Amino acid sequence: MVPFDRSLVAVEGRAIHVMETGPEDGLPVLMLHGNPTWGFLYRRVAAALAGERLRLVMPDLVGCGLSDKPRGVAVHTLENHARWIGGLIDALGLERLVLVGQDWGGPIALLALAARPERLAGIVFANTGVAPPRADFRPTPFHRLSHLPGLSTLLFRGLGFPQNVLALVQGDRRSIRGEVARAYRWPLRGLANNAAALGLARMVPDSPQHPSVAGLRRCETFVRGFTGPCAIVWGDRDPILGRECARLEQVVPQAPVVHTEAGHFLQEEVPELIADAVRGVARATRADPRRSPHPAALDDPRGTVGDRPASTPGGPPWPPGMRRS
Image (cartoon, rainbow, N blue to C red; front, side, top):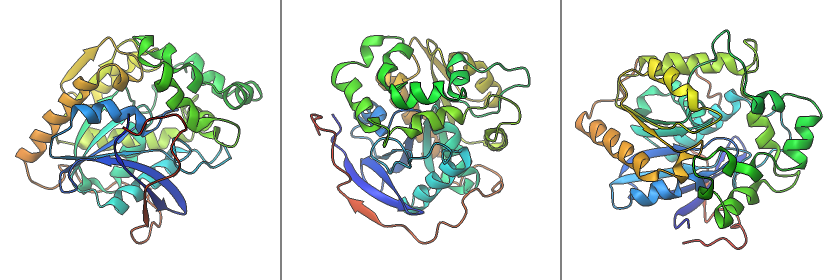
């Protein structure tokens, strides 16, 4: 299912699991997932891009997949995740990359790249948000629930929500079942491993004073100033972010939009359309070999990353019963 090279990259003392495929000297494409999945989400997109001169990089956010899993919920902040992913980008030496961002993967990577704009050459948005909520917004029931003390801990940490019911947010619920559903559940099994699902849900603003608002505002400023190639592939049947496409189109009016009948995890339903968008953005990037088409860096969320962290080939143990290829 995932015939990729695997490694662990140390960033600020945390091991980040990374899967890669494609030529090392190919145009780097950073494909970042959100809550509560991992790099496995992009395996079908990567398969659709096989043979292209693209270096496909699929990391797992800290707390997700096979990356290190802090046991605390509060460690999951937009700034922390942006700093960790920024450190990973530096460690892997990703230059003039194309970003594919879904869910929290969009703003986390964009906030990281706001501090290193010369590394960004193009963007593919896939059911993600890149701006703070409007003043009159109402949080979704999912995100309101995540902020309820007691009940949210029981539901997210005790009952394995939402990773146990991912099919419910799909356009075609058959797209996440069987071995695929198990592959999403396994990394977050048990209290020692599942803090991220609740932490990432609580990162979504529930008021204008929420700590994520400032970072999302920086993301919006960064994206509005970006003049490189962009594309949007959207799952209209997403009950979480489906209606946010109109807001995104206002932020990046130059981006062509492909609407689909997919749900939140559209990589499982329309991987070929995402791959087509990556090809288009990559072609446009190669046609303009200039440095990143963006103004100077915004406030730097990196902190001290230091020298290139160590990369350990092979990665952590594989989920039991899951095929490697």
